Each structure stands twice: as structure tokens, then as C-alpha cells.
Image (cartoon, rainbow, N blue to C red; front, side, top):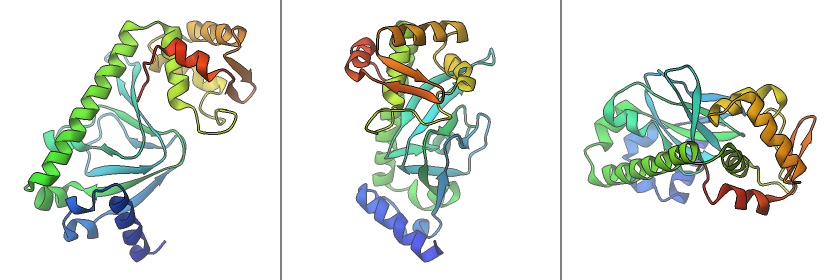
Length: 233
């Protein structure tokens, strides 16, 4: 894709999501596209971020590092979402990991352009405030899921949140393969052994089937009941 084609695609996306009016033409000229493959990290804990990212395709997973070295799942992001908005405002290092769940696309906007042209404009600031408020509410909900629900509830919520929109609701290899179960257990605040017991229980209850290369959801309604409406989103 040439630079002109990329700029045209960016404007099409921002118009589609009713965001084009938020940006000065000089800011547009400095925008670029970045495509992520499953497992790619867009942001790592401790990064001194230089860009605001607008997610326009795919699904991203947001987690944070705890003082004991473990990680905790916070939320999932789908279009349209902003990454780096809080760091733009407070100037602090990133305190989260942002990982692509599937093929995802983000628009990257340099902070320097936003600081020069957009942070002085009320329309952009209102949009930023609305998005930060929504994000804090989502993180608060996810924290309550982790603290106040059982591992069974949490895993059901996780499965629903991360399920691909495919006919058989089958997870792609790499997301729930055996080598990843330790990571998922940490994200859900439980142990590898306990998660395995929950998986076996879900299999026995015919909620899921476990295959050599992943997990297939066979009773989405049952998982939704078990999640009690609490989702990582």
C-alpha cells in the first residue's frame, strides 16, 4: 500500500467511525497504519509511549502486571478503541500489556501532533474524556469479575469474550493450546491445576469440547448463564 493509499484508507476509517472531524489536516498527514498478527504486542508494561493508537480492526487483549510478577486480565478491546489515551494525558509509562488476539489494525498518531494541534480543541478533549470514562468503567467491571466471581464464572466469561465469530466457535491454534494454559490461568487469577479442573468440568457438562489444537464451544447459552452476564469487554 502506497502512502497515498494508506492516507485514503485512514480517512475512510475515521469517517466510518465519525472521528474525521476531530483531527487537523496536519495531524492526518502524520498518521500511519500498523497491522498486528495474533500474539503481537502493541504495548508492553513500562513503555514510554509516543503514539495514540486507534483500533479499527480485530480484537486486542489488555492485561496488567502485578507486584508479585503475575499478570491480570483487564479487558478486551474491539473497534473502535483508543490505546495510549491515558498516557497521552498523564505522560506516564504504560502500565499494561496490549496483545493482538487476531489480525488487527490500528491507526498510529504521534503524540507530538496531538499535543500541538488537538489538545487545545474542546471537541477532541470531549471525545477523549468520554473514552477514558468508558475505559475506567470497563476496567472496574473486569476487576469485579476477577474479585467477586468463581473461577468457573471467570473462565466462562473469558471464553465468551474471546470466542471468534465463526460458525463452530472454535478457537484458533495458539490462543488456548496447552502451552498457553498457564498464562490464561494467571490472567484469570487462578492456578494451572485449578483451570485444568474447570476445563474438565466444562467438558463433562458438555459446555465445551477439548481438541488437540484448542477448544470448541458447544453450548454458548450454558456458558452465558454461567458467566452471569459478566464479561471481559
